[in-house]
Length: 437
Image 1 (cartoon, rainbow, N blue to C red):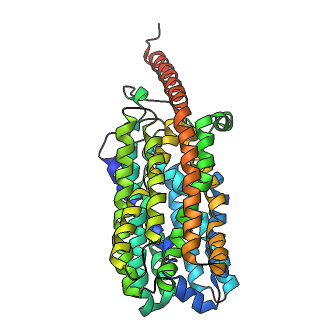
Image 2 (tube, rainbow, N blue to C red; image 1 turned 90 degrees about the vertical axis):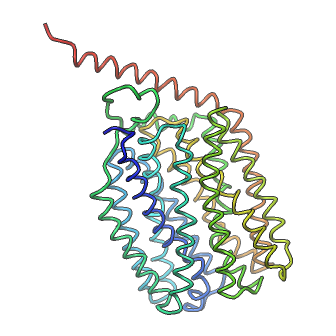
Image 3 (cartoon, rainbow, N blue to C red; image 1 turned 90 degrees about the horizontal axis):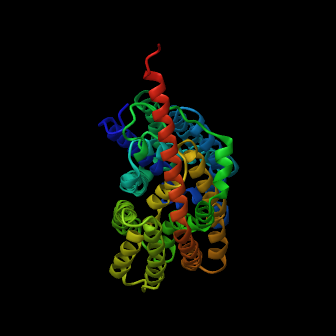
């Protein structure tokens, strides 16, 4: 299969739709928080435990998904993930009690850790110089899914209830499982690397335990792991508590919440693509480009969020403008971190490497919603959001600065490994076509 064929854009389109609908299902619990709390008669700490349960399960399954993606056909595994998504969401919808709901909602975390296979397969269709833009394009689906979930939750929950909303999104997961199973084809691992561009065929590369263990010897990757541990704290706090914050501390009605979050989420979506494109632009000029873009963005986000939460409650227009400005910069790092992980890892362990990255991110940040719940109960949600987000972004920017310093060496090592692999492939191909005397 030629990596530059039009089929690769079909793959991107299917994965975009998968992530869009999956994120709608995953994140709509944010705007549904209040009715769910009222249904089960629970407080912020108990609801924070619901969020944290799914995040912990998702973190636990990342290493397993990563290994499976590097070992077997990624498309078929993604179809399985979509099937699990639909089934577990239905279980959440029928849960009669709080213990049953927290258990069923935790089970939805199994498929939440399935994304490394998407990024790995896309990497085998697009060369390194444009992966940031493609990942940014695919990741547009996450805030747009958030928007879709917001609209569905706001418009339908009052009519069919929050359980009915989950029935709809769970059903969509089952439909997509069929589409992915029959529509997505596997690509040879490493096919799109520039060193392989002129080769007619390449060997089959699968998970290698020795190479996977070697990931922990790469300084830049270890720094990215450390940065990831703190980097997702802000995302989880904002995702799961921003609606409650607007409703209870800024006294917004449901319509005002929708009119505030809708434009902010749209700007957030643009930020993914702009961040990925900026990373590609500077990566072409320096191997440190993607990391420097990420570092600058998280610092700007910390400053803007601080100013945003200090806007007086009565000044809703200024709050919206500042919230949109913050939303533009905070997703910059996401497509660039994925691209950077793949800039320094061999194709057959890329799903594993990204799975480790996400495992560390979610293992740490899974406690963020619960921690915010404790802080909010003793002080306020606004203070909880500000303290957790700004602290995490400042620490993350320091780790990204160290990453930028060491990453040229690891990128150079990968390129040398790929050149050696390409040379071996040429020798193998020459031996296969050599006439026999």
